Image (tube, rainbow, N blue to C red):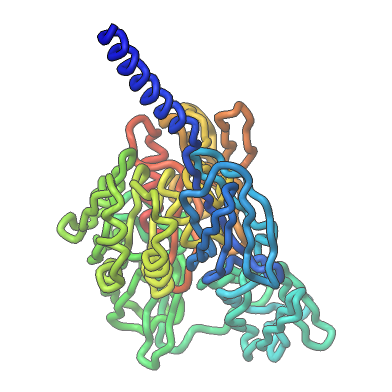
Length: 517
């Protein structure tokens, strides 16, 4: 009988312990909330805004938006949470928190800025009155934006003008003098000059006495790839310049160059070269095509490694000295503090590359790192990011590229479906000229790649194509490779990158894109 009571007590204890474990399993794991806060008036993201959350258990939580206008609140009870944004007089919304997951809050106030905003670009040209066959001197040249901003200049004695610091985007340029009136739509790109074309009816003024002409071509270090939009310059003794920009076949012509030995300087992105040319008065000197190559750049480069990309191989192809390349391990988040955490470290590099597959989880909340990256580009540094490293670009410059899916959650744009054969359209004349083609064969061998839906007005698009998505639908004719300015520097993003099974055209395009940085 005593044995039975002992056995019963043991069984009772075991059942009690089992019952406790079941009760613990019934308690739902908490969830997180990631969100973005914007101004009702401007639609722009707001930094330093306090966000108050009361979760389903009635517990209060506080968060604050970072420099990109985003916030993160953790350990919220599963169920309906009440979110109060303490901006613009305050606004409140309910958000469902799912156990063990990260919910997203998209502020309905967020929208792209209305109308053109800084940064700025320029317009130049020479105005010819075709009827009179004469250059239009002393004409008023102006742009007035829909918002009322006015930019004004005038033409000189030879009909030439330069209109500086115009807001980016499509603008209407007006030229008028007496009965002469002309209007043109021009597209202003940050830190670039739009060259207005003029008819050949008018004769150019005669070149300076004792001068000649230089013509030639510019190519990549491989000696075969012609480079468009390179700047070619000779500085005259009086400080003025004979200058031209290469066409889609890399050709340039410099007129009004003083006779004698002259130094021709060629610049394309971070690449440059100089050569000495002897100019004969009244004649054209042609630089031999075997002297077209740009010199390998003497630049310092930081590369953050990734699981699916090796941009360092492309750098080697275009002549960057491996000794000038510093590799950062992108397999963990340590690279964020090591490279971006200290601006003095970041600023020593001319270009920073983020490979596809870099571990960027948590980068969104590294406010100092994001601020440092923005400052780096605004001061003249360049950034290259590919495919699944898109989160770096989206967090640092949220108003340049509209990636697919939620802007508030990481990896949402990685919805492109694997495809081995797709034709893209090269819409940038310079890239088309360098590749000698207006189409490109695109391969996306990864199971998922990041998709761009659209871009803002200040963004240059190089390649467009369809984007097949994982759900079976397709986005038609969206950007695949783009570039924008973030001050004095540039940011280039491409959905494809250096990896196995891409086409030869894609590899060639990637090499050419290095000259856009």
